[in-house]
Image (tube, rainbow, N blue to C red):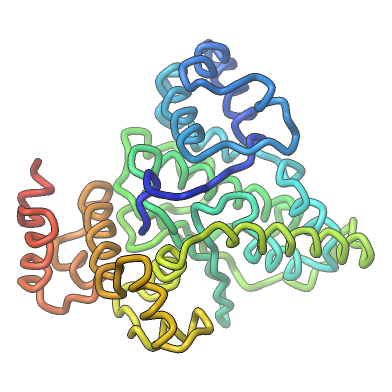
Length: 338
């Protein structure tokens, strides 16, 4: 995953942070203290179209957790977001013809609300599986972020299905925190920690249920605005980050250089030249991605060294150990013990 600190530009809507600060205040914390500690202006927070840099976003989350003394702040934030807090995406979802179309839109345009992750939807014979694909290394805010987006999406789906589509299971790609007993009451289903990826499992029923606010014309206009927002999200992403984001879709068996060139609609020769001009190569990008993923797994999960190696494409744990030592100077076991 790309390192956030080295991004050229990454911006997130401020609207969610206003809700976060409301929660801080409800727990006796100081909204003003949090804002001042992060160097964020009140004008920006009050701008309906305002955007935070990633650094501001991260600082606000960490300061809010500290000021509220509530480590489960992400859970509370996600569960308190309503379907109407998601801008153009809200209107597109609510005006959808049926549940399936609304869910498809929520998945497709998820990145317009947060570019830090992408969603995929797999429709099986007996269930729907929504997978969260993390696109960046989030460090100290990772668990709070995942808690927020998971509970927020669950709330949206619950609303558009009139609470008739109940979660079967949630898998979370991090170890259980001290407040782990809060998850099942909030999500309303069994929760499995230390999973390889974060997933929601729904039954494949009732997808053709019409939505009360269905409106074809409104839907077309709102979906078009979402499409424009989605297109703008990728405009500032460098070629290296586009490669990394494509590679992240294939964990456990990364594709070849030629395959990635095809994903980017380029010839291998053109892509190789573009990377050379930027002073890098496909192998350097792949190695960097594997290292960042390895560190994230070691720091936030209880997966075994063998399991982590497998996720990174190493069938032999010793090969993963040698690669990690080359990247970091220590073995995976020693790194986890630090």
